[in-house]
Image (cartoon, rainbow, N blue to C red):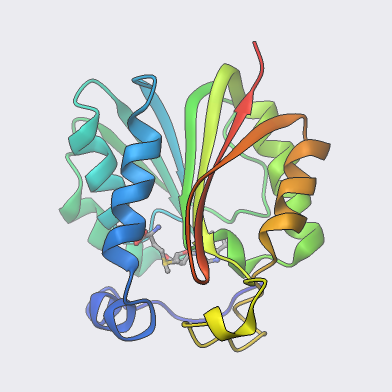
Length: 196
Ligand SMILES: C[S@@+](CC[C@H](N)C(=O)[O-])C[C@H]1O[C@@H](n2cnc3c(N)ncnc32)[C@H](O)[C@@H]1O
């Protein structure tokens, strides 16, 4: 479990310092999310809503349910996101997910806080709440094949990223069909689709 305390006031500065490609990651998540015009979205680890905002801008018909373990980050998300199109809920990724079904589940820079078995378990639970033909868009830190590609400092306590290969195996176990939408150094965006 991650006990790191997120501070919405310093969040963007932290991202700029530790994940210089965060804006590009958001762009790629939004592009991958917008395909197929989903209308019901679940954002796991919505934080202060910065990536959810980009996705909602790209999908004017969509409504989003955002979940996060930090009440401070959720308060910031309340100011960022359109209340007409957003619901926010305090909760953990390790807990039962809302039933859905959702056209799109997304998560940006949150799943790497779970260990390997935690990620595999989450992917199976996501598959269960996706509508048939629905997609999970994961934008996150990975352990790159070449250690020279590590950009973001990892403490291996709160941050426990996995390789892309391991995660693709866990998606396959959850019976989701994957494609790597984008990868750059230690960041990747994966689209995992539930077959119709
Ligand atoms: C790096 S921020 C990403 C926020 C947002 N998705 C974005 O793109 O800016 C990580 C977020 O994940 C949340 N988080 C971390 N571990 C979590 C868990 N196990 N359950 C729910 N939320 C978690 C944190 O509270 C934080 O808001």
